[in-house]
Length: 89
Image (cartoon, rainbow, N blue to C red):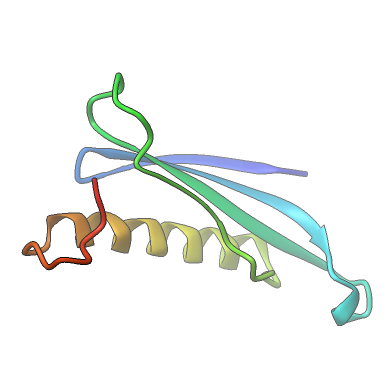
């Protein structure tokens, strides 16, 4: 069963989708995949980032925690002083 969570962070919306994903390398045991979208405060603007994590997680909670942490780090990087490689937010 898929799990979708929406949360707000620094004015951005983070939509996280966790879905079951069977992995052969772990003897067919059920694992979970995470993907997320970051939406800016101005909803008429395009989404900032959309990511699918290639890793598989042992639990839904682990996938959700990782996705939220990574999305928040991306947003924090948007507010950091402007080095040349800063993400466009």
